Image 1 (cartoon, rainbow, N blue to C red):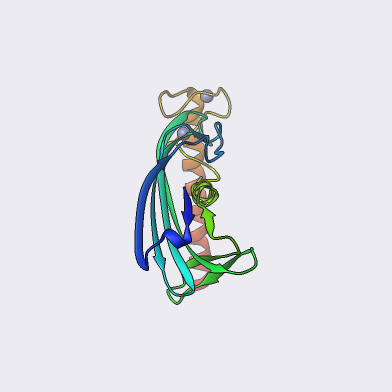
Image 2: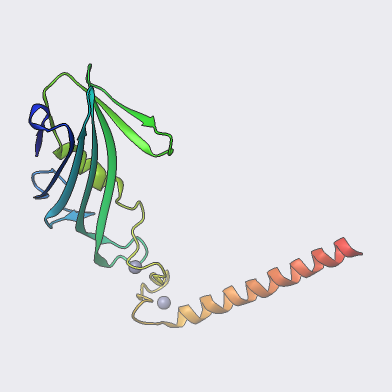
Length: 181
Ligand SMILES: [Zn+2]
Ligand SMILES: [Zn+2]
């Protein structure tokens, strides 16, 4: 959607619309943006600037960084921009609430919001996606998916973990005795 400044009425202007991943040039793989994106835009027109609040949400298919399974989850993000007339550059300002606000300087009478929506969504993509918080991952020896099956190595790993924990406890106790004595 193109925001045409002179078409905005003074004060609050709200828009909701949808966009397709292809229009936004979003990745089709890793993560895969395949579903429609819902966008809410609120533009506050003031005398010499426009404040723009943007939020966008969709569902994305990703590959779990731990078990390699593909999963789909909701993804949403928002950002605030201040649009000012002037030389075109993008800076980041801090407001009193310490919230990030991007300042856009433009000499045009309009602004294409699609690149902003793209940016807002891409910022929310996790660096290491997880199918679920407690994903157990794959066995490093035989590759069994520990979320759905088990294998002999898992018990060994559990035992190693337990004996390590016992050793760490012993070590801690020794340290404490040493400090007291
Ligand atoms: Zn996983
Ligand atoms: Zn195994």
